[in-house]
Length: 349
Image (tube, rainbow, N blue to C red; front, side, top):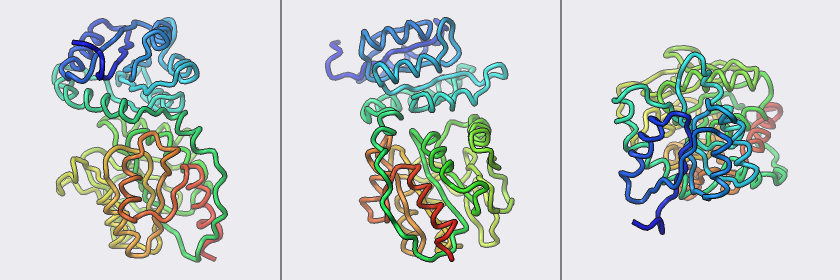
């Protein structure tokens, strides 16, 4: 079969077994073709230039040139969407996986440790590769599209005590940029739904905590949503804000559109409890999660913000929210954070 019209994929991993498994999974999708393989980062960089793939699937821990250095070189020489597939092992700190998003990777998935894990990846991996190819953007592309100065917006008087954030593909870096622009410690509770593979949530929290020097953790049921705390939704549970200002983890409500946690559920809980004291923010990501919930929050008097298209790695969730009329202001993440800082530092006076 000709490569014409198919998504071209380069696989980079020092394990021949892993390369074979990834190739087998991708070849089951007739719209995908593996055009090359490399056993180290240096060769991977060479093949990106030579073969010009649409997507790269890459490990981090490799000989000659490790994944982080290879990602940086690819991002500077020929920006290509990169999906990191890496092991969760004690000697390989998973925080390095999220550092890869700072270097230029778009998405991070845990490398399966057993046959069942590979079976679970059978549908997810080809679908994600197709979506990344369709988006055709990298974090550096997005950052370059988000350098315009923020408009001068005078925050209306409001007391902002809660910030609810939704993100998916490309989200870790966008969340970091948003939170980095807030006052430290932030005088509000921050609740985050980041669609992420199960098992990486603690590492994402640790990575953000290290970058922000902030109180970042995976949410625990019943803990107070207190100022200065950043809490991430754990996989398999909807993250909710309760009327008593505590965090509730709902594992009984079914997934919404395939997502649990769902940003729609988070925003709706804020709309039911403290709408006028909440800012809802939708960042880069595929699909439509969060759009309906953000619209409900806005109808109840909440502040509704979204990432703009130029700075989004994948302009899916923010685009759908904007199409529903749910978004008041759309800006790059750092500028959204700067706008929120205006509210937090002076908008409620």
